[in-house]
Each structure stands twice: as C-alpha cells, then as structure tokens.
Length: 384
Image (tube, rainbow, N blue to C red; front, top):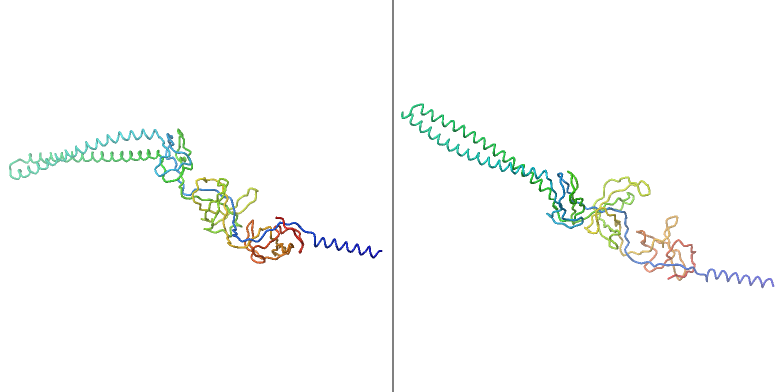
C-alpha cells in the first residue's frame, strides 16, 4: 500500500514538472530584425539668427513723421522705411540757401568788375605804349608820358583789387555751396530707405517719436539665409564636423523639418551654467539654414546634427539588446516558440535603434524587452 502511494505521488510530481517545463508558456512581445537606415545625431537647442542684417541708426536728433512699412514686411532696395524731420536742420538749410544766393550774386558782380577793370587796364596799357612811341619821336612831353604810365598803374591796382574780391567771392560761394550740400545730405538721412531686398525685422520707429543720435531706427534682414547658433557639449563634439547635415525642428514648424549644414565650429569651449545649476563646457556651433519666413530671429529651435549614417543595415530596437557585465551583447531569440539566448555583435546606435552586425539576420524574431527574466528554453506565447 505504501509503495502504491509513493508511486502515485511520484507520477504526480513528474506531471507537475512536465507541466512547468513543457506546458507552461510565458507571454512576450517580440520584434523582428529589419533593414533600414540608422542615423546618429547630436541634438541641442539653438537660437535663430539672421546674418548680414542691416541696422540703421539715427545720425541726428529727429522726429518721425511717417512709417510707411510694418515689421515683417518684405521690402526692396530704395523702399522708404521711415521719414523723419529735423526743424533745426530745415532752418539752417534755408539760411544757407539765402546766403548762397547772395554769395552767387556777389560773385557774379565781382566777375563783372574784374572784366571791366581788365578792359580799362588793357586800354591804359595801349595808351601808355602809344605815348612811349610819341615821346621817343618828340611829339609829347615827358609829363604826358608819365601821366599815361600813372593811369595804367592805377588801373592795374584796380584790376588786382577786383580780382582779389572775385577770389574771395568765389571762395565764399564755394564754402556755402559745400555747407548746403552737407545739409542736403543730412536731410537725405532723414528719409530712411532699405539698402537691400529683405524683410523688416525691427521697427522701433513710430509717428512723432523723437530719435537721439545712435538710436536704432530699423533693421532689415536679407531674404537669403539664416543661421542657427547652438552650444554643444564639448564631450559630444567629437563627431561633429563642418558640412554635416542638420535637421531643424520647432513647434512653430509643426511636422516640417528644415535642413541645414554645419558652417562653423568655434575653436574654444566656454563654461556655462545649465538649467539645473551644473557647470558645463560648451562649444558654439553655427548652422547655415535656407531662409524660412516662419522663423524669426531669436526663435528657439531644436538642431539635430547628423554625425553618422549607415544605410541598408540590420536593425533592432535598443531595448531588445542586453549588455552583460563583460560587455557582451545578447538577445532573447525566439525559435520554435522557445527562447534561445543569442550572442550578437552590434554597430552604430541611436536613441531608438541599434545596428546588428553579426548573430542575426533579417526577419529573425527576438523578445522586444531583453531585460525580462526568461530562462533558456522557456516556451513563449507571442502577443500580437
């Protein structure tokens, strides 16, 4: 009787073991090795800037009388952006114009007097020469000859004085004309025009506002290109190089992604304090970007610098690969509904996927979560 009971218990125990190792199944989610392109990027926030923008500053104290454009408006060269007025300049210009007209009139009078004196001097010279010949012939006396010579000398003095007065009049007119030209140029500065084709970025000018010398009146940016300036952690800079492709994204772009290129890497790192109060060493990187009207200077964007690209490679999600303490890479491969721990060799990885170099082929099925505690040979049921 005892032997029979022992036999029954033994059979029951074997049944339990068989159920545990042959009948029990673990539910798992799996993924298959696929082919695709793996891109490794260095991602940082960046600030949009517009290079070669033209800032126009006030050159004199002036009041705004008209602003015929708005911020964000497209403009062409020569387009009037701001009109200003300087009453003091207008008064000075009017006074100088009056003085210039008077000086021109005086210069013309002086020129006329010079011409008259020249003609009289010419006649006096001829008369003196004629008296000289007559005196030599004994037809006139010495006193008559000296009288003719004295008259010529007086007219020569008159001619010299007239010529000097004309020179002074010419100099005065020239100086006033130069002053008036400078005042006109200053008046021209009060009409601010766009120097380039582009967009009005900054427009602090508004009607009746008074600008002081050096105040910013307007900024115009060219419709050609933009820049994104990003501070990259020095530890992540190893793979970054000039010319690399950069994907630019931002909430204002929605699902659109702009493509730029690394144009400059600054030679020196700077210490900067992170949002968490950690001192970090960062290097400034500039990215050239085609002009995008929706982006404005100062906007914050996300810059993903493409440092590596491997096309047509075998891929798995990063969570499907486990790394052991000695650095080996393992996956839980599913074969015939059983788990087989498989050693693999990996390559490039990003935040989502990892490249499989050896150990698996396209279509091979593995457990998605390599961290699950599943023993070798365990039967699994795949959750679809």
